[in-house]
Length: 193
Image (cartoon, rainbow, N blue to C red; front, side, top):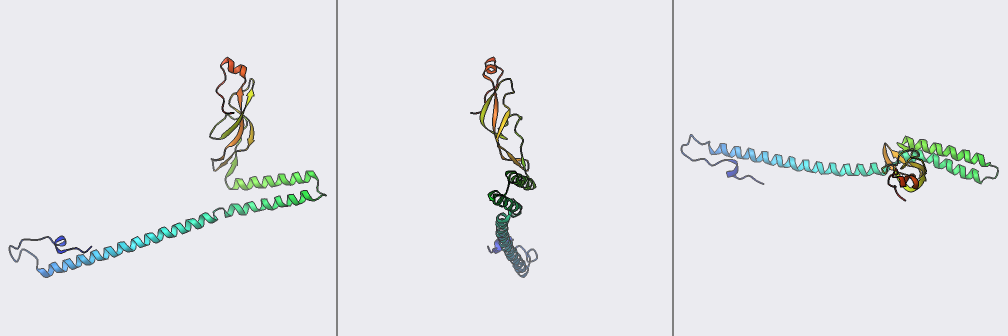
């Protein structure tokens, strides 16, 4: 957008020759302002281009990061796979005892748990704790004569946290006060069936 003369230099009444600047001075000021505007527009265009390039570079780097973000964890899981393959080979061998295979698999489970803990995964303890729908997924209720109501009595599938946040809720069975206690009015509502 080129500035016009009226917008840059305000019109002044011509009362006396000494009151207004000479036309040459006005032209020089106009040229200087036009050059400054051109310089600023060029700078703006360059900054916009640099910012677009920055956004494209960040998108590429983010995609590259996400592509290989799990590399470290996968490298730690490979020894677990190696040991599982050895356990299968050992179990197929007729000379291996049942106890040796069980011991080997137990060692693999410990290695796998240690690897998960390094990645920030911790198992949750559910049995004996009050039922919490944000931590537990109730799949059944169990009659509990004389026992507490709405307490986890059995864990069907273990739950896990990832850095303190629920990664997978524990699948559990929850206690329910016996029907005799419910008739007396001391039992709470059931969780789910």
